[in-house]
Length: 240
Image (cartoon, rainbow, N blue to C red; front, side, top):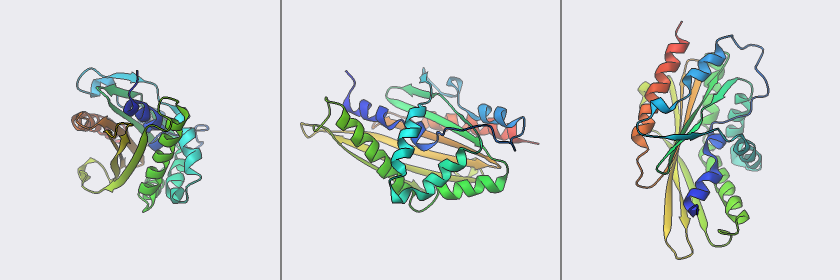
């Protein structure tokens, strides 16, 4: 049986909510190499230590999250970011899992540095943390209420906050959010899940990483390894 914590984590569909997007068509301005640059930025199983399994990105989560976000006043900047990502060259990695931890990334190639910088400013808006918190909260609440095994029995509390102490050497600009989800079970016990997102811009590309793990399960070392590999390949691909 899937645990309540695992079920709630699956409901979040993290990559879809934070960095995934549905691109309508390849933009007319796109260069022939932009798709290759985006794909080269995506993490693969060889970037991760240990034996990770993977599943395709959940595009349904993207649609579900954006529908909820549109009802939340604090999501103006976040929605500006997601709209910008529908008009660029974009690629989503598979979602990698090991021991309850999950890790994925998404690459967006913009027409120029100025456009990518504007998108990062939207993602770093003062109300985005509240937007993400409210969106996650509603996604989990709706999912738990729809499942007869958790309806009225499991309560969830989600909180994300901006993170400022991230390595600035990774790229030209970085925006990060981290926090967690706490589930309170019928017997009063609690289960906790770490949630986080890091977006790195270098030049006209934005590389977004999403991660989650139950408390006590290490996701930082795999995240650092994946970041280093992805960022390195993207910088090489963008080099003149």
